[in-house]
Image (cartoon, rainbow, N blue to C red):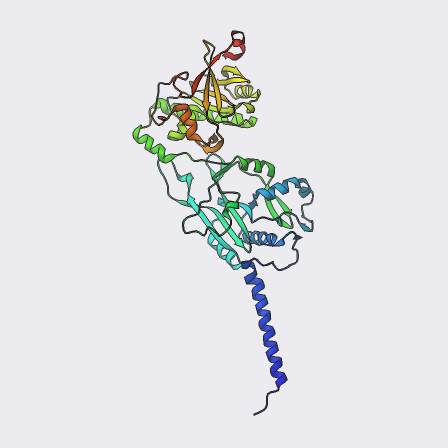
Length: 462
């Protein structure tokens, strides 16, 4: 047998070891490092900055959704705040030619994007593709409130949030749905029992603590840090909306229980009143929104929404609340221009202001109560025209949330039960048709008299 040359054997062993070592490096670089948070490979076109690994995750995510024809837009509050400062500069340099990674490399645990529900349907294909490029994912879903109503309490679930994790960074994808009030809505992020609560630091996510409502967005496309990204046309407006976006649903289950005890009035008069009141509320919302005046459902209109998800037919009016600091003198002329002449004006801006409008020929009126804030409570005033007596209605301090009422996106007090109990007492669930605004409310108290020499100003009847 021919002797084997030791140098040949040594060469073969060295070659084999080198190949194995190269394979290990390749495997670590492209498979293990994304999962364990190692630094991403340097590739042509990457950005330098504080930490480009975040940029790489965003780039990979945008590439993933683009390959599936899914349109997403950036809603991350931190990044939109930074972008808004440089918005004009970004407009003038559409190619995003800066060499430094200024936005997507900023320190943060997560980047938040939004998706319109109707923009895609084939999530299984996206998940498989995401896994192939190293992402792990989590899907959060819950009941679809759009399917709930007095006739059907649906249990159908819809996706509300997706979270994609790669390396040490996460992408939070918030799903927005169009509601019948012509606005966008996203649901809460509620983990089910079997879900991994350590998947990401959920307490740091910027969306999902509660449902949110937004006006429809106009989007613009920008090159940001070398990545083509869609953002809200006016980031500052979107960020302001976000700070006031909390949404609460009408309580359909409780409303059904209420009607089982107190059947609804289906008479022709009741149906006609609801129709007129709905049209009046929509007109009032259109008018006040055009002026930029924030308002909410108050008094009997708020009670009808909270108790029975509808207008109370025997109330005979629509009641709205406005903070006195949001008062604008143009309110009266705007309503008159909309076909609602002033019926009465009580009080003055400094004290107990109240406006009432009525459409010609209709028996439905619009009452607007202005609210004043004290150290530990809020109040609105009332005036008895024939005597000049003043009344004050006290409420615990409250904040405002959005809801949907008779196909309208409208505000209500977030602390609705406390608001209702202040105005109608603990027995608010029991309908009361005989109601004296001077004595029936548990929160009413005397507030003196208007001086006779002020009556021409503070008691105006039309």
